[in-house]
Image (cartoon, rainbow, N blue to C red; front, side, top):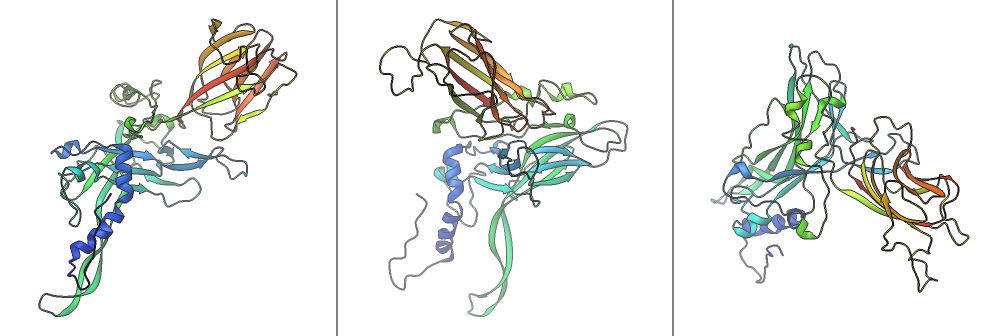
Length: 414
């Protein structure tokens, strides 16, 4: 628990630091919770190793419109192109413990607070709808390409002053300027290199992206952005299983290849492409009941577009294991020595594969999984609205099928 201030004696003297400890503990409660879930690296004596990261937190409509049928979708991409600059979505900045935790306004220091005394603050765009703020990129009037660093500046103890009346030690009453409250303030800016942290002032800088400004550019394009923000997820010790691109896909191995011109490297994946979804889909085609028809929506809980997929499917001419009327005999899924491959084989077999829904234009549905039982073929598609949809082609399948489909986080700017 946090430090608990107790006032037990009527008339007991109270100092301002004791009163402040009550508000101090209350204000930092959410950050203490984050410290347990994220397990940021504690400060070790050098400002150069203060742990810093972001958690993407923007939202957008899956189809970019005000349609009543749109899917509320968390926006994992933080940076997107626009005329003369970039648009930045909401995110939460996280700064680990600092300077052996000297503390803000008399906060306790020590080993415990060095572990839990992190700071978080939300960059909340002022616009509604797409919830983005636009950051202008300086014009490039020269003849060579300029690379800008888009970064978040985090002031972990930004004070708001106010004039209040108070009693001086000599007993006189007068007005004085006091720090009325403090905030964690997150702003976004660009520079030709990442500015150094200022631990003394409590200001820390977190890179978000590298922006390429070609000579006489008008618009920043998709190919001009490489998101390389450090993204923090739930720590593995919490039991969480995470998914993310390898560092080489957005850091050291990318920038040298990018060069002054040409397309963004094809091996690029944004650092914000974290997390994922795994779904199980059961389909019944035997015993006189067909549970899935051609064109049926299988899942519309999230936007399935702009993702990478891995999947495994099994089809067997036996009941589903979840059938309550079956108590003995073989069921599906089951351990079998069937065929393995991208298409499946016959009336009992397994298929494994990979798929993608990375499209700059979503004109056609993308097939992300498929099983062929020798009679009928079932494909799992991502349609133009971002839904998982079944496509049952040729004859009706003669097996019951189980799909296990895992999708990556979104790569919105693919």
